[in-house]
Image (tube, rainbow, N blue to C red; front, side, top):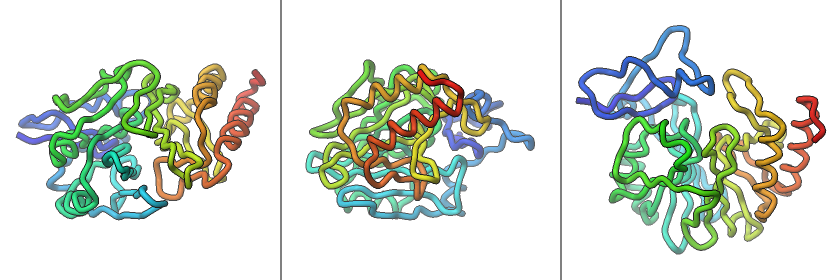
Amino acid sequence: MKNYLCVTCGTQFAEAETPPEKCPICEDVRQYVPASGQEWTTLTELRAAHRNLWECFEPGLFGIGTSPEFAIGQRALFLRTSEGNFLWDCIALLDSATIDLLYSLGGIKGIAISHPHYYTTMVEWSRAFENAPIYLHAADREWVMRPDRAICFWEGEEKELGPGIKLVRVGGHFPGGTILHWRSGAGGRGALLSGDILQVTPDRMVSFMFSYPNLLPLPASVVQQIEKKLAPLEFDRIYGAWWGRIVPEAAKAVVQRSVARYLAAIGSSS
């Protein structure tokens, strides 16, 4: 019995003797099934050919990503606080070196994930760190392919994880699309950990999509709602989902300009 991993999106499935017949995450319009068809691997096989890389972005915040790139290619963020450490979003590869290093930094108190494309091996991460709770928005419950008692489905618009650390449901890419607001980030000016709910673009603006690989935009009303939900938050920096995708300063103004740019591009001014 194995917990198979989808090679295209990185989702891990419940234990089975044979690979799943299909990957519902990839069959959804927000993802895709390659022309060559669905392929499967396991965490054991992944460990044999890949390793994790690290980067410190600022005091208390580290990036963790896999080389060579696997599946969607996102990197996770490890947030250290005096009240405990949190993993934001998830990557498929978890190996002994990663576990040892994270324990040396204080372990993981909780795991929070922006949306289903980054659920991947979240259960493996939880079990490696004393069954750390996994916080997912209940609106995306149907996309969990490996249920586990560590998963905590939260409801509503906000959830406090600790002092100065708050999850905010903004929707968009998925109904439960979530960002993390870190009040102490960016030298006390505040930071958002956004996954690709707010996609940091190469010109250090942000954008919004229903489906990234299939280039399906969100309607104006949804993007305006995202802007409205971010308005009460104080933040000066945004950390996106990939290496190098960071808005380093003046991020709140960048979001406002980005929304205006997006609305103009889709032919909407309101």
